[in-house]
Image (tube, rainbow, N blue to C red; front, side, top):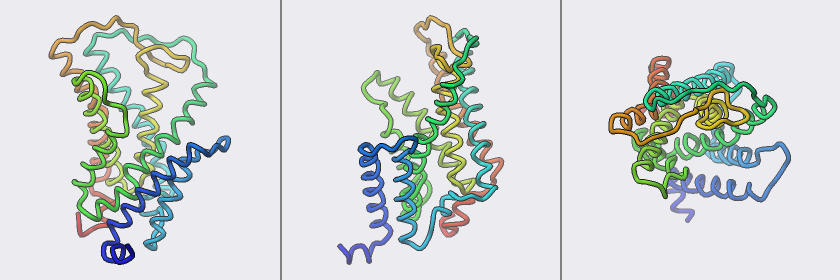
Length: 269
């Protein structure tokens, strides 16, 4: 085992990192500390430990306190909310839905949900654009690594068990969502941006702009859904991915180069 580790250090670290992160997530289910996102803390710690074994730290992921990186959090948060709102309204237009504005909002619950969404989004980003993703880029290239982790991201979600068309729609949306996160990470050079995007998108999806009215909804739908024709189905597919596509375009316009690749693996760029 030691000889294999010495001979194949990158693949060995990739496997060890994946095992330790999985163990951290499983172990976090048995540890409860009030107001502490144990799973996130453990995953960040394991990521730091793995980078430390190579003489590096979390700055490889741009996970630091530089002002230029911290500003990516509110930027990503607002962009994530706006991207989902765009998809929401395109879907409304395609289905001819009626949008209702909530007259009463439970602001206490809204603030609670706002912070509750963050740890889950951050954990997923450390899983899919974190240590193992960077090692797979080093082992292969950014295209292969991105494709493999996009499939992993889809597998993390419950997309199976329904109608095949619905499954394909949902999987396609997740695939584009992952491309949004990976592009934002590679271009900006910091994991703070995909965390902000993921946070904003999930918060908007679950709390702000919803299909059914909830205590935190700003906008919700009041529609009797009917069977869709072919063109409406195509329109819904466009609505599903348009937010992510727009974010990818904006990200590529703001950052013309892959800052992560230039900094860490210039030979692979």
